[in-house]
Amino acid sequence: MTSPTAAPATLLGQRAYVIYWASRAAATLGVQVQSVALGWQMYEVARQTMDVPRALLQVGFIGLVTFLPLLLLALPAGEAADRHDRRRILLYCLGAEICVALFLCAAAAGRFASVPLLLTSAALFGAARAFFAPANAALGPMLVPRELLPRAIAWNSLAWQSASIAGPALGGLLLLHSPALAFGATSCLYLASFAGLALIRAETKPAAQAGSRLALIKEGLAYVWRQRVVFGAISLDLFAVLLGGATALLPAFARDVLHVGPEGFGWLRAAPAIGATFVGLVLARAPIKRHAGPIMFWGVAAFGAATIVFGLSSSFWLSIAALAVLGGADMLSVFVRQTLVQLVTPDPMRGRVAAVSTLFISASNELGEFESGVVARFLGPIGAALFGGVGALIVTGLWAKLFPELRKADRLE
Image: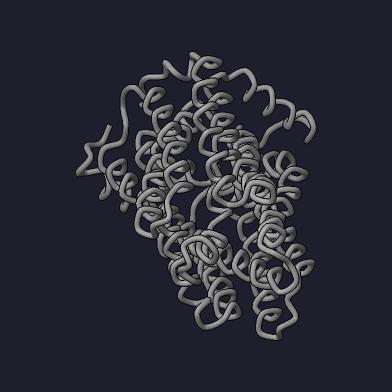
């Protein structure tokens, strides 16, 4: 394998990958800015007529309506990514996302945003992301030699986390001016990502596969089920993050617990990505090679513990620190999971496996937001954070017992 010092230059020599990496970073930055703006605007609109628990529930509904299209479309989207040109799929999806962002910008500028309108926009965005995610995950490995794949995954994660630092902070600053400006910036970032993908000159269509759409979908599901390491890794992420999704509660923590306003809210949203980026930089230079399974489990356990600390904190800076640890621990487990899944999955099946993985990840993220909103409705934001952190710790112990193959997974080469 290429040495840590030589690897970045080697990756930079892969022109198509570099363009893909930059495009991915721009799209992720747009998603983060949009997420901050949409959550904050939903909370503000709902608080005009609702109390705090009911307004939090509306914020949680954003996650639910974003996830539902993915639930319906993920498997056909995975089959499409294994049959059609992956770059072209991404271009269509980004075009749809640009339209959604421009509509949200117009609604904010025209002051006609409402709870139903914001939820409808989130659902349309979710439908586009259902096709975007598996095609995006499957495209990256086509653009680098196999021996560089673990390091490319680290750099992909680093791009995501770096954008996740800048996105919430930028979103918070833009919200100080207006939500319309935040949504306008989102549409520009999606447009930049679209332009980057249009410049890629490489083979981005997978090899032709025989069989009906239903047969290919069944084949992908059967593969994930048989591969205990793959199924264990993505299901661990599902249930741990589903319970420990503290980020959905951040509008309430920023406004009603820590009293820091939209700028503080942006930094709270950025804190997990700050920790994740630090870990990502370490992994990009020196990817994990041994003891992958135990490292992943310790990462998920640290994620749950940091969520508990965040829930108990009444200090803005302690909350920032807890969220940074949470993000770093999540980055560690995500890197191991993504590398394991990509290394054991053949290219003709990457779209379908990525679709199942995306379904699980989105269930943990979007449904996690909904779960946090529902629990906060009854326990309040602090109680919901504590409930999620304890739940993540319980899941970690249970999965370590149920999936010994994953616990004993060793090499990432």
